[in-house]
Length: 540
Picture 1 (spheres, helix red, strand yellow):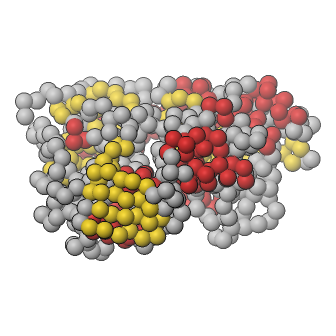
Picture 2 (picture 1 turned 90 degrees about the horizontal axis):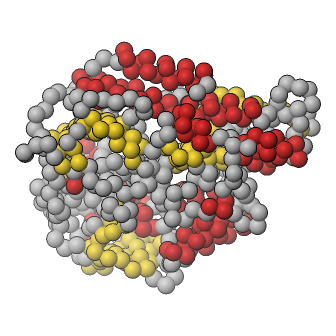
Picture 3 (picture 1 turned 30 degrees about the horizontal axis):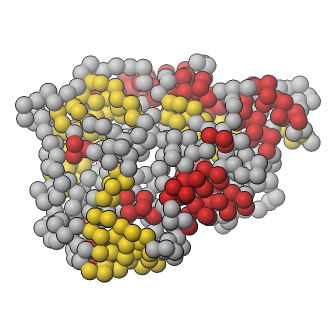
């Protein structure tokens, strides 16, 4: 491992050593009840500023996870398949614009009111009109046809709409108050919010009205700690599930098992795709970068970096090389990958593209322009900081200078159209992971498609994938859009990103806790099947 990466990891390790009893800081205390579970939330599941309201982001939107209090029309089973939950079945009209969903007639909310189709219609109509992370703008309207049948009318056909039905938790139409619901949520899920100590923890207790199998754990305490305290939380011995920080991947904790969950968590570098012509975004952000707009630069970096070395050195092997951002998904295209770790080939690509080191400083140039750019990353995330550092070192080997810029997200987003940035995506929904990421758009200052990539042939295939009602055909079309006519969003095409690693989610889980069988590719949602968890070393 290079010295700079070791210094970064060492610094964080030093912080961990001096962190005081983290569990006490979170307001926790010893609890001997074996049916009580304490979970330290991963950084992807941050404390919700607006409370536990699914239409303002709790459980869906930028990240998808089990909302605990609410249940959804569909859920994911242990095989990763989307199956009915509150729904019983669904059908799609021949034009793809009308989805009809039948729902259960035996469910009550936690306040004893009866769930029916009107609650579903209310939830999605309200969500459509609420400004939040959830994108329901393609819904024209939702109508309860009767107490057990809901009709969704879409503006345009969308094959991926099943993911919205999968992740949006259902609200009670009769008692919903936007001003108070987040702190006093009512739902049909397996748990109810008992109380919320803001800035510290939320405690959930079992919902006696839950229609499914009653969970073994009658109480879940969800802590919201900083990443720097994760290891000390595990060492305290009073937390049952704790995420493992990058700096602790080689560590063990007495009384805990190390649990690795496959993620589909692609991490990589976005490239501004357009030249700098003086344009700015609506927010005034600069657009374009004359270095990264050159295909030879993007291709050379994709071919020249050593992804496996990053997996080994940064993530201690708890990651796999990533090339297209969706390598592990059903709609991946293996032909869109490239062979990497070839520095000589990368240098040849640069040379053939007119980039040469004429002044002997180790950095290639073309027409007087140095192959140099800034790379933004969020320093609060050790994994992304380390990835940026190693990427810069490897880029230098092929003659490209990368200047590291640690910054908050507002700053990163303000510079994403003109400077590369370390990005991540985890969604299994191809609308988010492909369409929003690569479909042509006008500058809107939204973080999806941060480089303003555009390719009309790829766009056409993505549009077809969105509009078909055949989900198998949709997967084929998504895959084809990655590599079409020598272009497309894959690294073997236009290479608007250099995706680097697929980083697993890792946890310390207390001995005796059985978390069942986790579906592949959804590691960001470790609580996905929490109703099936048990504590096996107890007689409770």
